Structures are given as C-alpha cells and as structure tokens.
Image (cartoon, rainbow, N blue to C red):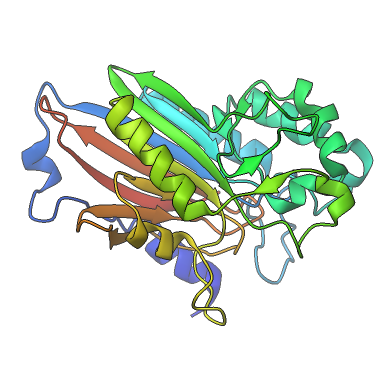
Amino acid sequence: MKRREFIEKTAAATALMSVGLSLSSFQTASTKHLTILHTNDVHSYIDPFPPNHPKNPNMGGVARRAALINSIRQENSNVLLLDAGDIFQGTPYFNYYGGELEFKLMSMMHYDLATLGNHDFDNSIDGFYAQMPHAKFDFVSANYDFKNTVLHGLIKPYKIFIKDGIKVGVFGLGVQLDGLVDKKNYKETVYHDPVAVSQDMARILKQDKKCDLVICLSHIGYKYKDEPDKICDVKLAGLTKDIDLIIGGHTHTFLDKPTVLKNAVGQDVLVNQVGCYGVNLGRIDFYFDTDQSKIAQGKSIVV
C-alpha cells in the first residue's frame, strides 16, 4: 500500500487510554476537554509539496497547517500547540533567512512551546540565539545544560500551563549532540542522560507541582531497530513513571496514532510522532472528569 493511501486510511484511527472505559460513558457535563496539537522535524518546509512529488504530492505547507489549527481551535478553546524540534534546515528558506521566517510563522500560528533538535544548532548556538526574538513562544530542554553559553537562562527545563483548571507540565529532551553536530556549533552545551533527567522532571511536575498531565517534548527518537540499546522514546516510556505523554521527533517516524505503552509501574503512557516536513499534524484529546481521572484519544491528521 502506498504511504499516502495508508495515511489517509488510518488518519481517523484512535488510541485510547484507560482500557475498558469508553469515551461516551466517561463524558459528563463536568468533563474538561484539552487538545494537544503537535509537529516535529518540519525542517523549514514552508510551502506544500508540488503535485508531482513522488511521496507527498500536494501535502503539507504552513498555510494549510495554520488553517487546520484554526479550525480545531474553533472546536475547543483549550488547545496547546507544541513542536518537538528540528524546526530548522531543509529548504532555501533557512539558508536565506537563518530561521527568522520559521519562528515568525510559528508565532503567527500561536505555538505555545518547542524543544530543540540537533539541526536547530546548524547555524550554531549563536545563530539560534540571534533568531529567538522572532519566536513569541518559549523553548524547553531539561537535559541540555546551557550554563556557559548564550542560551543560559533563556531555555528552561519545563513550563507549566493551566487550561480550564487543568495543570499541564511540559519538559524538553534533546538527543546526544556529539557525533551529530559539530562541536563548534553547540559549543559548551552539556548533554545529560535523558532517563535520569526525565525521572527528576516527572517527579517535580507530577508530585511537587501537582500537574494533572505531564508531557515530555522529546527529540531523542522513537525507536532504533539497528541500535536496540540506544535510548529512545519507547525505552524512555518503560523506564520512567509519572509521564502521561511523550511527543517525539528526530527519527521522522510516521505514526497514524499514538503508541500505548506501560511505564515502570505498569501505567499507560502515550508516545506519538508525526513524521516530518509538516506533512502531518498530531492531535491528542484528553478528557478529565471531576476527580481528574482521564482518558485520551489521538490521531495523525494529513495536512
């Protein structure tokens, strides 16, 4: 089956948490509804693919994504829009504007938060810093220590949002830069183990900050078939607790719906990634009851 046909056939598929509890039976007049929208590895793809493109004909493009996001916001005012990194590098727009256009367009779409991917260092850490004034949203990274760089104090480990009384904590993770990025581009940035950092972040957000939902915005990769021991989102989910959702990037993995995995204490974790180049928009809807118990359904939407 061709990839586009597969995506179209599966775009309406959903993944449900809290097995055995149907969405219809869960919803009441007091149910609160939160929508998480997300992208990853857009790589400076501003325009849609041309009609004769062999893999993604007439797909993607910022204008279509913006229209889709606006239509979803008309349905539900409680929306968070997130990006899992590699915003930069891939088209002449980046070569010419150095990231200014990408950040300005994301700001116009009212992104709430993003993390950094390895390609976001391609114009060096100084190049990223120079473009930050164009981003009207924040960046998070918990396992990159920017202490001795120009980004010190500008990139926080996490951010907390409150939507209709729902407290959402989001922290960021980045991939090991050594071997992927020239040292002169990331300079004195120090990489820390994602598992240990995630355990700390999840504890802080869930237990100390009392967040109802904890999201890891990750650019460490979904899974590595040829490197089974390499840390990835799938392994991270099973090694930690108190994370409800991992939104991933880096491996350009097209998932038609979130993967449901078990964490270190046997609870459900959703893991999702929507490929690359802005072809898909991820959507995950969480429903919270009065006791803050929750279920979720998710899908990838072709842009």
